[in-house]
Length: 290
Length: 337
Image (cartoon, rainbow over all chains, first blue to last red; front, side, top):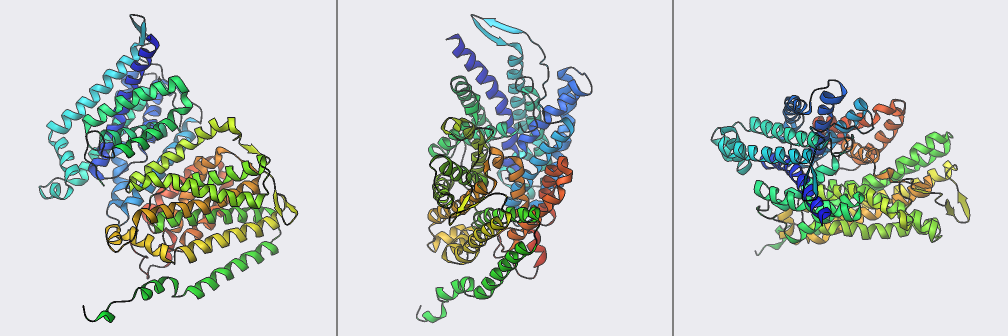
């Protein structure tokens, strides 16, 4: 019984991090209608940048490593939008072109990381090795920290989107790009902002999970697929939906891994995706977009 | 309403596709094939033949991918899944059931059709980039499944070794017999590519695909059964790709999950991007350029994959229509998406 509860709690922790990745993905998709296939590699990139600061080159504490990574991640997001996405947005086949180009970018990042850091796995020490024991249930303090940081990020983003001027501009562009242009919103700037936020979110998620899973150059596809399933289940553009979906699916995954083994995680997510699409293509809370 | 002759009869519309230049293009195609066949006989270098055998096998895969992605406009990224299914079915049927290789390749095509339909069915409910993601997820989920399939003889990580050689009218064609393999793969490749580009895509089905891609709602309004033709696109594309997988399995006599690795996927993407989609013979030219270019890059092995990735990004940004778009700027594309 205690083991079941431990699995539940660990699933919830992972769900919280998946939620951060998923919100990053849906932020860009909502604003620009571009599905960023490099989202998972950017998650990996975050892990490697933090590793560079914390283990590889400097020996900063992890929290400082996260802070140092944020500007680099934000700049990468802006650069991706400016250099790769913007020239394609005006083209007639922008949909297929952006899929091709972001997939290509994913492979560039992966192979670049593999060249720079080598194909082996890397790991980062967590903030603390401590363990919390409560009524026979053990939970590492680090997982509690991850949980709190992830929830904090989600809440901060929600406040930013609803209350700040720039956040409202992002939401305006998501809802109606033409209308947003007409009231004088600089759409290019908004896309840049959305990409920067998205990369920062997924990058931080990559750093937070680095001590739990190992970092490897090809490790981003799993989180990417999971984020997508969460976005679909939660409903597009719905933070609340992504939040609920992330917990449901995170816990489900934890139990599947516990009972069947880690090799079944990816096929299980695929099955979940198919089931969601068959039963409720709109998502839990969202309005289905074509 | 009274003057019905004013409307263009359907036959004239379709004849633009099947009729105009059909004979000329076919003759050109088979002349090129004959030229390649002669080239294989004249150049005795076995490495040269090996590279071209790979080119011919890739041609089938890329032509099928072009059919579904370029012509039907369905963002299918599970093409190598069909290839792997074909390779594994042919290998397993010939190893365990001891079916003669040519028959096993045919069976691979049938199994490919089933898998194509299985991947296609959920995709019918999805639109655009969601199809891309779903199909790519299938691609990503397959290697762990193959891993689990070790129990039923799928060989796990090391793959299946010792796939029987091709048996051609009583003659064993070993992997080392490059000349026979050159002609066999050329025969398979040219027939499949001809069927795809000249029969399927110039016929009724191709018209339906292009109509769906360019004006989905309108195509439905004039009676194109969207579900049927989308499913057909998946099945037809999967059958040819699975056949290519079967040929590949018997040629290399080894099948590993490497088929689903980054290298194969990147190669396929670069071929389509470099050649240009939805415009014969763009994709086929792409195959020749990329396979040969990849062999020339062998000495930079560490940077090869990075280079292929950069090639995709750069080509898509600067030449979105690929080589074929650069070559014939005059003609409008067969319809834009």
